[in-house]
Length: 90
Image 1 (tube, helix red, strand yellow):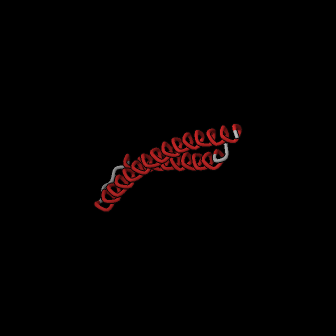
Image 2 (cartoon, helix red, strand yellow):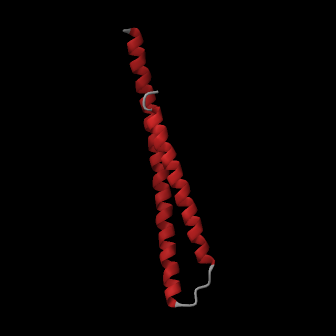
Image 3 (cartoon, helix red, strand yellow):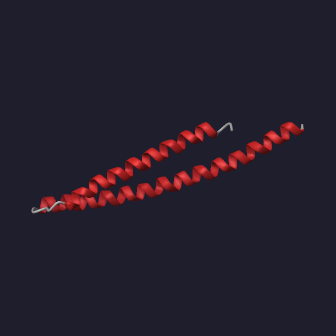
């Protein structure tokens, strides 16, 4: 309906952001498979693990946002159908 293309665009961006975030977390995870022989290397690995956790939190937030957008889309569709029904009746 009227808002569908706008909300579809938002959903597409959310999906792309989530995929990118997931891929980045996976790529960073490969760093943890390395053996770090220095304290600087181990410190770097700790920071990478922290960043991976932040990325996982971001993924969850993106999922929550996508769910919210889908709910809003359904509600807008219902409202729009009601408006169209009133126009047809009037």
